[in-house]
Image (cartoon, rainbow, N blue to C red):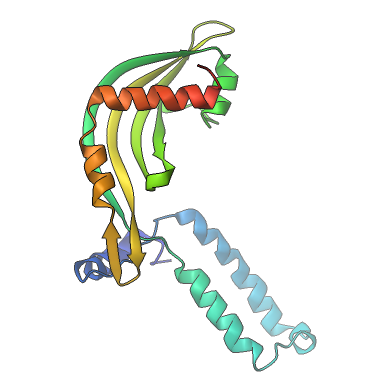
Length: 195
């Protein structure tokens, strides 16, 4: 429970200060797996364990798999803030509900501002933005690039030697607001299959 909470952050800060690339995502929904504890306790207390008794060699393998699954984590990412305001508007030929599905928006956000990522899959990076999606009429939807928040670049290397692609970091740093708006427009066109 501590591992998946913010209380374990000092451990990660210490590891990062020594160049050890270990990280985790704070995600309390993972704690749903604790439901298995009463089931395993019940198994321990019943006669079923005599029938399904694990073999002596199998126990260490099961323990190792569980330990790896428990600490399975992703490498740290390089984050930088961009903090740019934009009012770039893209009109798409799609009704509002279809547009939301194509943008992977499945609920209504507060103030109608939604997080949206401009992806660079080949560079293992993305730019985080806030967008607004509004219906114009039954056939058209307006997508407004409201804010350009920052960017993230995934690390490469091994657990004990984390490296960031400095070329990618410099590339994204060098992008102007207009460049990012063009990338946003291009990605929206690809998602909606328009020219």
